[in-house]
Image (cartoon, rainbow, N blue to C red):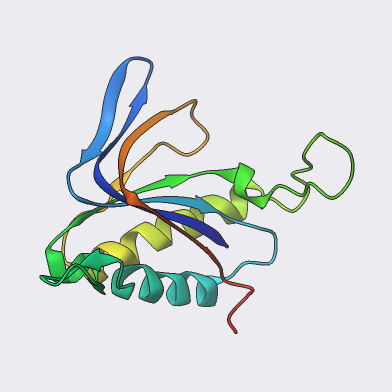
Length: 150
């Protein structure tokens, strides 16, 4: 699984002109699920997401997690994170998991992350044409791949 985590002041998902989810200060997390991903990947990424220290402390040092600041999280499925761009100019999405794997792992990630932070995680709608808006704070953007755990 791959995540793009963006520290934000606010973020939202709109579908067909209707806002389906929005958050204030916290994290916008884009979630890509690849073939072969498992619950072990979900568990590892939930731990990283909830505990990642990317918010400023009183000295202006990134030393606090989303939990520490009482922040919110919005998680949006995004299969394009699995793109391979090695050949040509048209990305290949052959590594993207099908719905039978991707939906349960995305839902599991959201549910476990909600438990980890003690509040609901905002969500997009899997497979929908979503308009995602955010005010990136910093900007701070972190990419995590569960297959790279060095």
